[in-house]
Structure formats: structure tokens, C-alpha cells
Length: 156
Image (cartoon, helix red, strand yellow):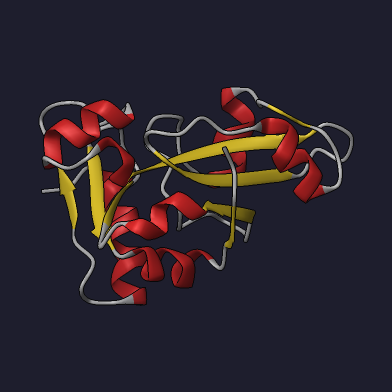
């Protein structure tokens, strides 16, 4: 049985495609390394869902990056047209409906400007957070693009 936040993601995914299946572990998948260890994949196959906030207009920005990459915040700022900053936990929860450590790429109350790391496209499949710090789901990079409507860009 899934936790309520993981079930919320499973319900959203079910509406998108019957093939998505949330898996919840006893152990943490909060970090990219922990997630990779749980599902036995390469660190780069983990989709880190990072939330940023534009400095002036306070818009939320989602960056879905490979677990082995570090985001270049100035590059994302160029994409958004203004500098970005890391928001506090309340902003993340208000924007996405989820807490840091389990933010999924989908299931948010409203659409969020989303950028997808081009490096994720090299893998046959990737794993993303599913609403809790112990839940993930598997999908192809193409499916990630389709369900998030994100723009594939260099982000590191």
C-alpha cells in the first residue's frame, strides 16, 4: 500500500498512462544516490526534480536534471529571463503540493515552467520521485517530456 502522497502521484500517472507504476521502499530514495541504489541503476538515470524561484517575479521553475549533474543556475536564469534563487520549503510545497525530497515531475496544482536536462535522453529509461522520499517510478525520457511538457535544454 502506498503512502497518501505516493498514491496521489500514482493516480495522476494512471490518468496519463496505465504503464506507470509507483514503487515505494522502506528505505529512503530522497537523494539521487539513494534512489539509484534502491532501483539498481546508474546515478545519471535518476531524475532530480529541483524547484527554483525567479528572483524578481517569484515564478516557480522546475528543473529535471540527471542525478549525476549539477544545475548551472545562471544558465536557467537565461532561459527564464531573470535570475533564479533556491526557494524555501514552504514555497516548494505551495507550488508543487509536495515536500522537498519527494517532488515528482507531475501532479502539481498548476503547470510549472519546466526544463529537462538533455543528458537524460541518453538512457533507455529513467527513474523519478513519486511524491514521497521513499517512492519512485520508471519511465522513458520521451515519456518524461510528454507528461511534463518540459523543454529539453542543457542545464549543467
